[in-house]
Length: 179
Length: 321
Image (cartoon, rainbow over all chains, first blue to last red; front, side):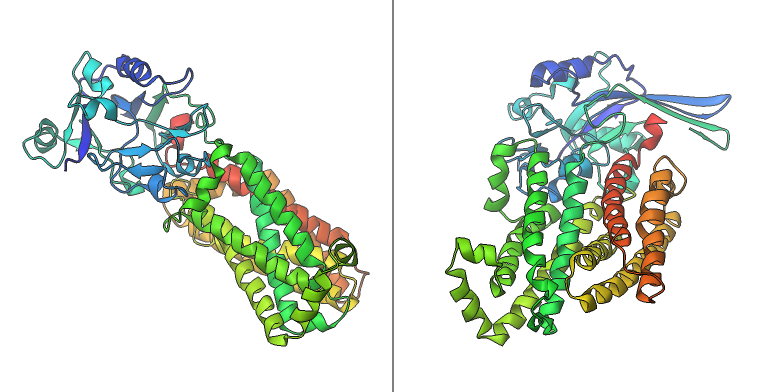
């Protein structure tokens, strides 16, 4: 069984928001909501100031506080590739998972259930890439099986330096940022 | 944010409602529920203790009036929880599963245990108006009172389930590692003690038995003192932890929530009532409803501040400063 993850090359990301628009279109995201978004981080001390642009979304963590806290089992790790999903029919909208996510990657859909990035599971199950990966004009995003040493994502993680968001939170994210 | 001349600036295009610019998902319903849940937990422990220690043999014992109030209050609290749900028609899903790792799932089932324990307590001596509506209750009451062993167990059950309910209200929040202010193992002790304190204040306020009123005022002084001590320990723990925890503690100590915390929770909710009640139990002044009312309002404001400041506290706060 694969373990899906995403590798994002921050050297290539220009923050064009094509991924954001693609996600909204593919997943019919309500107006004013985001499953993915762009973060621009500027840090350092003049004159050696660095800027990193990255596209962020649910980290599909291996250690999932959002799943643990769910009182109905609506939040779950899907058997297909370890993707973290929400069963809309099971969700009661208690918002515990939204509070539990240290990345604030979830929101409450206007229809009343918790919602977030699904890695476009409808596409992935057909062997396609998530919509955000598909449209990226700079090809900064890679999607694949982290457990397969021959996959593109594994090779990139072997050959480049990378970081994850908030490693101290202990959630073991499966979104990696190449630096 | 500027750290030792080092710039760290984050901007985000995300703007999800109630998530950005800072988390405000849980609104007034949750603190109301946590307050009522804590107070009912305290009431059950006090009532259970009165039963267990044979005080129920005194005709005007508060253990006969507490459970009905507790039943009403916990129902109001559960209704507040229901109002908070975004997907209300699916609320029954809570009771088709038990999720071992979810404090909220534990809480949902604990809330179901509360009702039979409180009803059993009520049935020990139903109010005259209840007997007017359902005369058969007197038969049930007579049967219960024939068995002192059963009565003792009603007391134990009330204390046990009260303890579980009071502890769970704190664990619900403290299990969230994502919110540094909540993520302290002392939160359940704080909420349990605060629940006991507000319940003691309520019994102090309504007790018809003067001895009981005096006893509960003394007990409340103890609970308030312990609560102040827990606050000190909690802040020591947070301030000696990671930076997000230090920033979280500062939200209450010196930050935007500090005026409300110091004035309404510590000052008017704990220290002033403690002084008044210390004078009262030492017979320097008469017992007054002011102190217990302040304790109850302080307990309510405490839940509001902890819920709101907790949501504001964040590992990623730098995003929005």
